Length: 207
Ligand SMILES: Cc1cc2nc3c(=O)[nH]c(=O)nc-3n(C[C@H](O)[C@H](O)[C@H](O)COP(=O)(O)O)c2cc1C
Image: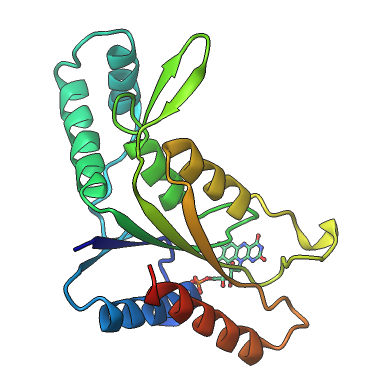
């Protein structure tokens, strides 16, 4: 039995296209994996901790071999709790709209909170990073409205999927499939949406 966590980065609720396509994925996943547990982490639900001065200080304390104390200890405990929740799943579905060529800042905040030494990565002076989140699988729904594959730089640059795909691989999650919805300003929205829903169902069936 697998455990699937859907992590969503759009705050747009009922109006969200990435959430709707992820909903199609989840519906098909539940239908074809009736024994699996499926949960949702809405990054905008208020439960994601900040990663500010105390947490950044704690991270550097841990890097230096020390133990965070006081407010650093509290901030570190919140980051560890968030990582442990994330790590308790073996299947991930991320829904990620493009925001200003990158990912919504809540997703970057999530990455900053969970990307901790001895949890997500380690580092060796000669060989570089080690990737600790192995044996997991991810599906990612990427959406944008203006940028699209094949368009010129006047329509923006994709730092969105390139950044997030790189983070997944850096963390050790290399079994990745994506669903894309980039109708662009001149495309056929309904056709693109139908294709995205079909791709989401197709991945979900054997995920
Ligand atoms: C704050 C913000 C920034 C955006 N920036 C871009 C962008 O840089 N390029 C683009 O193609 N679309 C951009 N969009 C459009 C969204 O990526 C697109 O509408 C997406 O499908 C929204 O996903 P959602 O409906 O799940 O929220 C932006 C939308 C918002 C709200």
